[in-house]
Amino acid sequence: MFELETERLRLREMTLGDADNLMSIFSDPVAMRYYPGTKDRAQTEDWTEWNLASYRENGFGLWVATLKASDEFAGQCGLILQDVEGEREVEIGYLFLRRLWGQGLATEAARACHSYATEALGYKRLISLIDPGNFASRRVAEKVGMKLEKEIIKWNKPVCVYSVQAA
Image (cartoon, rainbow, N blue to C red; front, side, top):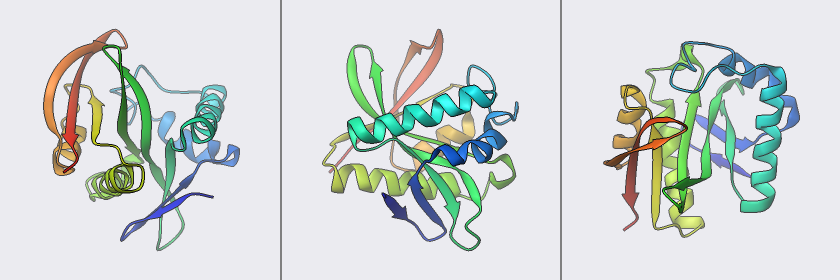
């Protein structure tokens, strides 16, 4: 099974057994305020299945992040194929438990995903799609080396496209 490690986190493939942990984020209206809405149990299970399919089809997806010190669920971070104005792009996505916000965990995980995507998988360009009002997520993208490239309409709303070119 796939695993990435950082100083404080382990990123591993999701399993169907992760639905309860994911629900602790997906059912939180504050954590989900920049997404179309919260997710119920069935939607969370569908999300997990979608990621399992992405692992099989693409070799990556969003991974569960756990704290190394306690093996406690912290959130999700990983790589997602996205359609951006007709182009297939690889996105670094991240979403963590609200009580862990402000500790740099999303940045740490996103940096690990950036390194994996460029060094192990050979991707030269990575993006993050971010709601314009999500300033914390925008800061994470910037700390990973991304710059605001443009604003597009996706999911029926404005979305900032942050991007970085690998050296």
